[in-house]
Amino acid sequence: MDRDPAITPHEFRKRFYACDKASSWHKWNPLHVCRKTCRSSQALSRMPKRRTPLEPGGDQREVFYGLYARERPSVVAFCVYNLLVFIVPGLVFSIVWLKRHPDDLQNAYTPMAIGGTLMSCWWATAWAVRSVGVA
Image 1 (tube, one colour):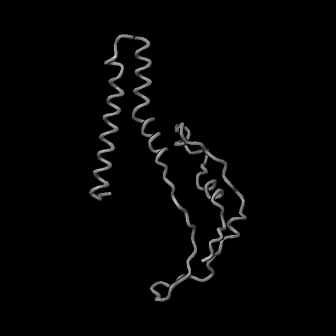
Image 2 (cartoon, helix red, strand yellow; image 1 turned 120 degrees about the vertical axis):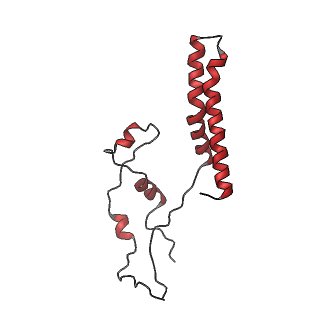
Image 3 (cartoon, helix red, strand yellow; image 1 turned 90 degrees about the horizontal axis):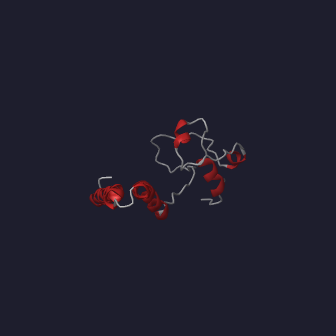
């Protein structure tokens, strides 16, 4: 099989992560960055195309073309996301609370403790589901 890609990894990322500005979901998500969509047809003309139809139920091995995309999950990004969702809101609350009530540590750090508890419950549930093999 020919491993010379018709689309470079950079071009694939640019096309895959592009979005339509009209989508209302992306307007409210501060972590999403819309990228400009590629509109050229040069990559499409370079891709190999099948000229004969597939024979259903045939015993012969057919040549099949497609994109070979790999997913690369990031542990660092996942941990940063967990901190942003579970810990940072409680930390911001505690800083604001302590500025107005300097002697009230218990009420200041309660939301952060709840966020840490929720994060540990979420991790325990995810680990249990993964260990059992339900998902």
